[in-house]
Structure formats: structure tokens, C-alpha cells
Length: 267
Image (tube, rainbow, N blue to C red; front, side):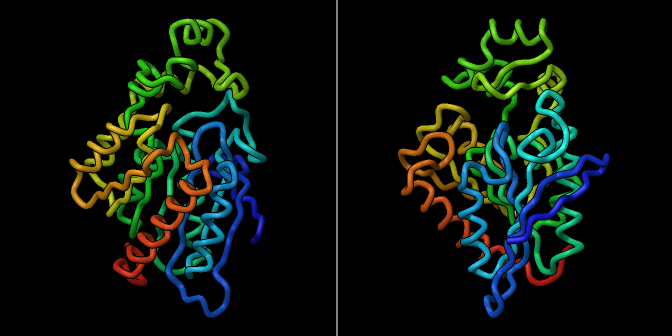
């Protein structure tokens, strides 16, 4: 594994880690791992283990931390969807320059927002996309939350305090600024994915108390070339050994097939 720094398009430095496939393992392209809000390039360790698995199957995996997360530049209060879109573009361009073969993305939770909104330029470059427990409806997840995690973090009292103080402590620890919530009222990831996206696999825990399983399933059923895999008994993220192993195995198998179908060239 190599640790690198990648400048975002506005100059903020992003922490990244590259897992290259060993000699003789074959070359099945590059996979960007896109984490969720208040996580980092490790995604609680799951992305480390996923990247190691991908590399043993002939894929280069690039993990990175969005601005304001982990050891990347910026502050949590300064996190915005627009900024994350800049970060994703910078890392995608870095990967295309440095590594050959098809490009794919695995995006977890809130990472699916910047990924989806980047589809107008990103979709044609991707041979495949995997979404883990994706945030596809910002209103129903954050602004008018329907599930326990959202109600606990973004209820009326919390949102009123955010407007007054200029920040909200997510999970009581990670400060988010009001600009992010202003963006949430404008952006619609589902529409972006429906308009333009590559072949896609969605994995979602059927006991998710953070992000809607039903929205993800219905979206996957509605968009051509999308597949859906329910992880039985899993809540948000794949935190048990069994759930993580299932998610990594399904993701690796699907990405190998997508890379083979995509071929050596990028659009």
C-alpha cells in the first residue's frame, strides 16, 4: 500500500492510499472507494479490507478521504456536496493518469451523493459502479428524516440549533455547517443516476436504520442495468464479520465481471 496526497481541484490536499495488485495477479482496472459522511478513507476498516481483496483479484484500489475528513485538508464545518464533487473528480483524474484499464467506483452511504451528482461527466468513464447503503434521497434522509438515525440527528430541535449556531453535531461529534443543508434542498441524486449511469450493483442492509432500504431497492428496480443485493440482517454499513464478508465477496465478484465486460479502454 502506498500513501499519497492528491490535490483537489481547488487546491485542498486529500489523503489517499493506493493498493496495487501483486505481480502476476492480472490487471482488471482501478476502483475508487468513496466513503460516507463523518468517515474517512478507511470506512471503519471495511474499505481497507475491501481494497486488499480487490488487489488480490487484479484490481488497483484507490481509497481517499474527502475534505474535512480524516487527515485531508479542510474542516468538517466546511464540508459541502459541491466540494466533495471536486474531490471525487480530482481523484478520478489522478487514477486515470496513473493506472491503466477500466475505472470503477464503490461508493458508501453519503458518498453516493457526490458520485451520483457527478454522473454527467463520470458515467461515461466508468465500467461499473457499486453502491453500499446509498443515500439517494437527501430530503427523506436529512431534511425530513423518516428513520431513527435521521430523526435523532436532524429533528426540529437539532435543525433549529444548526440555523442559530451555524453547525450541527452529527452523532454528537462531527460538526456539519449550514451550507451543506442548504445544498441538500437542491440536489436530487436519484434523478442524476436515472439520467445517466453505468451498470450498477446496489448492496443494502435490510435492517438499515440510517438510510432507506426501500428507496434503494425501488430505485434499482426502476433504472435499467441496475442490480440489487439485499444483505439480510445488516443495518447501516456491514459491521459484523458475516455481513462484511458478504458485501466484499459480492462487490469483488461483480467488479471483476464488470471490468471484463468493459475491456481495456476507457471512454
